[in-house]
Length: 294
Image (cartoon, rainbow, N blue to C red; front, side, top):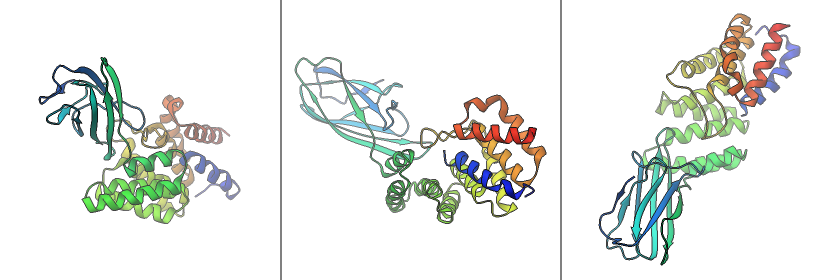
């Protein structure tokens, strides 16, 4: 790297700032009871639409059989229920992150209820809870949840790559680079197209920066995500990291290599969209831009 050694503490600090950021299927039952609206939301409060990955049933009350329900695009479904106590069981697999969230919630329908909205919140998988702790910066707590999920996922032979990816992010935030890299490698071995693992490992390599090989691999990982179809975002799972942040990180990797020409090319590519970047990404962009102008 051709950067003067007197600047290294500044860039280590900047790196830390940058990277450490319908319809009702009423199978009988219910009769002419009051219409109850079930509103399905996830643990971030977003509506859960029916369709792929979603399952929900209502049992109890005067029902003679479970009612399968499927919400519309706004996460709502209307179902006729006689007065009584019911249980709504639901599960939803977020396809993009392969996070299973679920609910088993008691609801009560009273005489005179009409179009009453009953919110059903799906939550409580260890992976989802782990990400919640991660977003609150409780990285040791997140690691515990991710390890618990990894054990269950491994036993079920599903989702372990997502658990390893999550462990990678939490461990590097907890300053455990060795175990973080091992976790990312396991995630990528199971899913070699896991963009979040690519981004996490690239950040780890930039933070470590122990050799030019680290920087070369970081550029390769970042480029594979930047060049892929669609725009990367780590939200809502964890940080606010978007594609323009990745371009700025790639500029940093070239800068650390002493390649100022490619540093400038990446800054120019990021410039039109930099306002939508994370705070750390914007700060890093401005610092690199200022450095190249001086």
